[in-house]
Amino acid sequence: MRLFALRGAITVEHNDAEEILAATDELMRELMARNALEPAALVSCLFTLTEDLDAEFPAVAARRMGLSAVPLMCAREVPVPGALPRVIRVLVHYYADDDHVSRHVYLRAAKALRADLESAQ
Image (cartoon, rainbow, N blue to C red; front, side, top):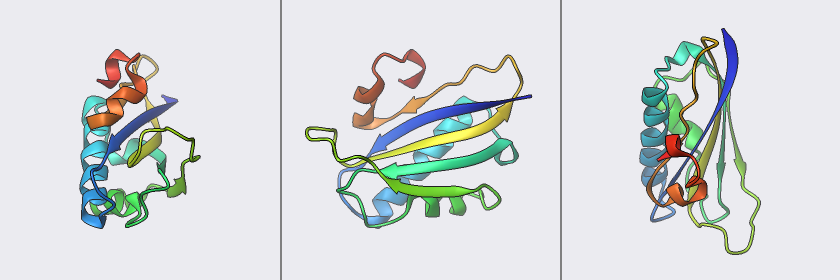
């Protein structure tokens, strides 16, 4: 077993608590499905939001989906002028077999953030 890290991102249309929670849930479920991850394999998750999103913590969605034993943290993205708006990002640390290949997930308009990664699309 070895420690791996996954990246992912998703966008929302509005700064709305339910929209942030639904998008975070969608992102986390897709990350876990594409990488065949069970909650017990997760070490930690760091969520960030762009400065235009403050209606809810993405970690609430992770807790709701059963990640109650995983350390979660939320932070603010650096507000770079011209950056893609209304983005939720996550960095997940997890254990998997040595031969595992990480499949990052970028959904909705966030696909543009890592168009270079085939596994992210």
